Amino acid sequence: MTKEKKILPLDFSNLNTYSVHDRHSKVTVDDFARPVYPGMTVKELLAGLPHQFAGNDFPEFVERTATAINDNRPILLGMGAHVIKVGLNPILIDLMERGIISAIALNGAGIIHDTEIAMVGRTSEEVGDVLGSGAFGAAEETGRILNRAINQGADEGIGLGEAVGNALLREDFPFNKQSLLAQARRMNIPVTVHVAIGTDIIHIHPDVDGASIGQTSHYDFRIFCSLVSSLEGGVYLNVGSAVLLPEVFLKALTVVRNLGHEVKRFTTANFDFIRHYRPATNVVHRPTLEGGKGFNFTGHHELMIPLLASAIVDRLESI
Image (cartoon, rainbow, N blue to C red):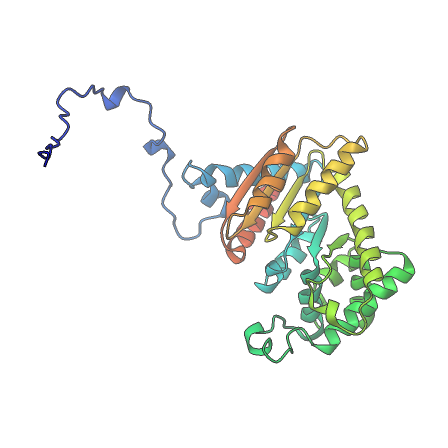
């Protein structure tokens, strides 16, 4: 049997050191946050953020957005339905009223939750309670109103977003003032809807027509491409869409560049409570390789979007 070799601790006595006074440091007290106080304005709050990471990025994004608005450049918002479900419609409608949001792109779930808000002032069923019985997504009014609106839109040769907005205004629902689609249509602000067949509850209803969905949603994609073609100097926000809208945005950007439109220097931002691959890649990084800058902000929509709106409105009033 071989004798076990004892391992001795490493001797640190000859380690080369240097003075902390001579070393470059990434964090200094000059970068620290300032304490908050009662009655603080949004501008003062942003100025008091620590000069680290998002503490630098968020005020810069607000400044870029305010500059774009002041220069009459477009602010395009792509968003998932969760933004509606956490109660942010009033803030987004106010931003449309102020002329800050130029257009909105939604996924298919967005029109469902927004329409139910318009109809009855509530939305979002408890899936676990009804999936077992096969009742999930079977609300009669939701399927009927939306599918018939889409079918009529196809007959009229218009986009899906415009068709649904027209239907909500035509029906004069009691909560239309809280509806993104109804209010955007009233203000003539484009809302495009980008649908993946089979992902939305209205696709299982009797009035569904796949050809009408495809026609109106593709029309909206072309409208969205037109909006992206004018994005130079503007801002594109992706809020709460992890896959579909980042893919749509990237395809729109490549087609408008292919057709000769100069869309290189613009600002993008992704807002979500989890960081996902596609928004980071297809919204923040790849589109801004030719110029401009992309930002990634992680946090709950119900906190981050009111903060963003407050900061932008406050900054615009000081320009």
